[in-house]
Length: 261
Ligand code: BJW
View 1 (tube, helix red, strand yellow):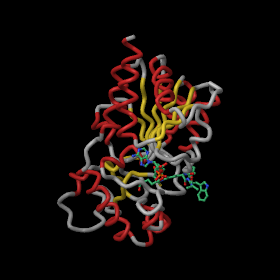
View 2 (view 1 turned 90 degrees about the vertical axis):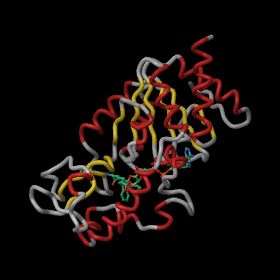
View 3 (view 1 turned 180 degrees about the horizontal axis):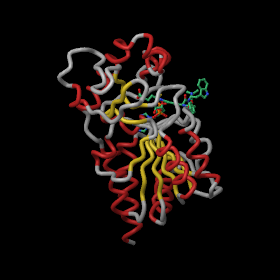
View 4 (view 1 turned 30 degrees about the vertical axis):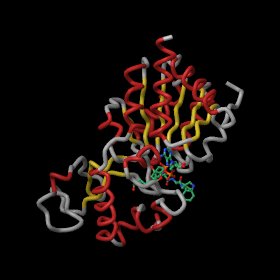
């Protein structure tokens, strides 16, 4: 699709996006922190409310930071994981899960670690930046621990039950490679989709942010849902301005109408 449709007639854009989605045989949904904002989980880069507006990512989200001050980094993650554990999927997550019931093939490629897509009912979820539900020892020899595996330990950070090193969350920090299986699958599915629906990412963190371009270069129609224009909305075919929790349920309703027509 070469025509750019934008804000002046938002309802037309929504209907066009719904028509494109209703015809999709292979949909890839690419999400970031914004999709979970309405669940009460802060984003990273929004001015004032974003985590990186309050904290220095180099002091918290790098392997060097963890080596330097493990107790500090652990306590920050413990706090954040507590917020995310108390959160519920919002109407945006639920609408994305609903798409799986309406369309032939839907996969979610997420940068989020909160597990809310899965809790909303999405069954094909690729986690590019890891998961807050999994922990490993620092050098990665022992993986896949859950909170329950060290709930009894008083020490913070807790120790690996096998080697005694500190445990850390199995999330991807700056300077670290993405989980190879997830990254390869995301690339393959982005290159093979006919539509990519982007929700709630600023699109500045690579290599994840390359997925929409991979999809676009392979010929997919790219739709972006975001309250603000940003790096990715410049390259998308259709931009739907607004919060995911409002736009996505409307979009799914419109997809349903197109499928029933
Ligand atoms: C709504 C909404 C609503 C609001 N509805 N939308 C220059 C310097 C240093 C490094 C680099 C550099 N250039 C490139 C790099 C590499 C670096 C990078 O990309 N840095 C850039 C930031 C400059 N990348 C890496 O280091 C990556 N690794 C790597 O490159 O490895 C190389 C390697 C290969 C092989 C071996 C070894 C190494 C790793 C990146 C890891 C990112 N990790 C984090 C933390 C995860 C764990 C945790 O949660 O703590 O991932 S950082 C953070 O950013 C998190 C996110 O997944 C990621 C993306 O953020 P996201 O989701 O886009 O959120 P925001 O806040 O940016 O945007 C929110 C959006 O939502 C906004 O658009 C809002 O408008 C919108 N929104 N409300 C819908 N209601």
